[in-house]
Length: 441
Image (cartoon, rainbow, N blue to C red):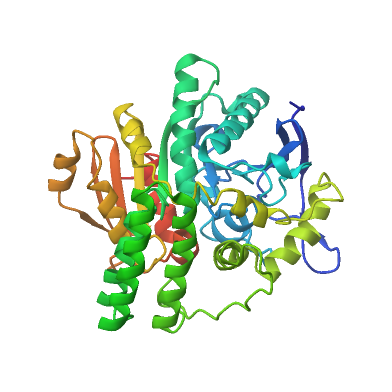
């Protein structure tokens, strides 16, 4: 296991010809690599909280886990969602740094600026992903002792939620044993791939109720969803991933290419790949991971950001191994982790689920369906509670979300948001962060 290698920056490189400007009250930031296994290198990027009235020691630390698997938190989550700057390198008004320090990490290895020296080293299942993340977190908290006592939360999105559940449970156990010193407080699962089958089974009814499928389309989507269910019931998870791709194609044909990440945004079909090998995986990759690597973000990460970081090896291209990350996880992709959420709740770990109203890929109906399957003894009490309307500010009259919580479980229904909640509803996402981390009620 290699040492924690880090670089620091006091300035932000703009896209314009090498101009360097200092941002007002610029957040302190550090980054580096951790060798989580021999020849497997994980990249991380930490921003210290940037609040006008509070020191970072008075605010929590948030680990952000992106989805895919293979989408980069250090790229997408940072510049498209919650980091201090957007991809035009302009300050973001709704950055989460106002309320927390943020730790982005490109995982699994091969994602973003993370890389492996040998193709046999890609993670192939959640166990391997969690194992690598535990090595990383162990090194991180050992190297940055200032964060050992600060409340620590894992926030996630999409497949990142599945990874977050696994990491949260393992981290809790490590803290109990004393092998990792940190003040772990809870996990937030955003539009998370916790139960793939429940998501798939709800696609048809959701699209039908929003006038995006007619009776014929509903019948076709229901038929392919049933095929996926049969494959999962027989533990044929690789086949289920293949059929999942088929289901998405059936939906695209019937809905005139609805956007899986926000049903109100029109999708432009990807050019189909000529590659015959793993064609279904190639299409899935293009649909769900390549999207996070739009050309402007690609140019930013492989241009000015690479230059600023100064530690990225010449042979590593941002997002260069992401397709292999996705394909290596194909067998694991459709496996549910509802049981892990149950274990988190039983261990009295705070669990928050939040979901965007306009998301299709992980629609809210599907999230509610797997929550009904929890064996958590307090589920009935949670279900009986009435939800409460939330507004972004006391002056606002528009409902931004609904919220319900009981004991250590909470749910946020985020209105007018798709799959990437902070990108679509930045103010509400920031308010939710403050509520989850107990800075606001």
